[in-house]
Length: 376
Ligand SMILES: Cc1ncc(COP(=O)(O)O)c(C=O)c1O
Image (cartoon, rainbow, N blue to C red; front, side):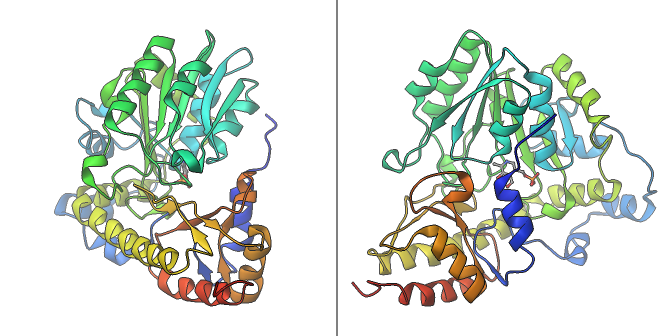
């Protein structure tokens, strides 16, 4: 399969480990191994100490699948398949579900693999543009109009990267109805779920609303453990599940054994893990929000509703590409310009997940002071 480069991941690969202050990551600050192990209950600690490093079960460690299932209503451990991060699940789902002659719908700007893998299968991919004037929200009627008889997959990232937008409960129900009426699968990339700023905004998982709903999640975002590379997909359709599992034989075969146990520990301690993640995000969001309020002539942001990222706009004459380059090379601060999404305008992604966000933000503010019109 030939596939276009993943521009965002190439950008991070180039700059993430050589730039001191990362203001644009979507994951939450990783935790030290000793702190994760300190959360283990007796059973998990025993599993950790006794672990032998052989192959593991393709579908995932049964007790981990059971723990994941317990986070959803009406979902059994059998419905859960684990993967190497969310990324592997996206890759496999697109390959299993799509091919030439099929149609899929997703949104843009967005996480590139959500449409690029579909394209690489030969499927026809329609991108619905999200717009700041609509508060980056999906236009549900546009979705309805875009459905075709051969629409096999509707793939939505809710809450959304990079905008932090989500949908209302009614809108989400309508999306599910549209997918069901079309006979399409609704692949819901829910990796930022559980990071809603107002708990009332938390939507039911797609898999809880429909047998055609596939719910994707991962340890990287709300649980702050990206280095585990453990993600999962809830698939209630057993035939589809079997096909996805068979495809995994060609990618990773099974998960990393230590990562499965560490994921189990973290998910069993999820109340604490989620509280930690939310407090990091909310503190940093508040700092950035204040900066936008202090500098309305330089920054504008549609307030995010959930997740760890937002997509503000740099106002004034400096292009975001130039600003990002100067910030990186002269100030050691990494922001993600919209150009990496192929998106026009002066938008950039800001990420609220890092513990030293305030330090990078201070440098970012000092840079803004150097721009023409800084004190306008
Ligand atoms: C919307 C979305 N989906 C999937 C992923 C992939 O997650 P992971 O890197 O944990 O596999 C990301 C990562 O940034 C993401 O933002």
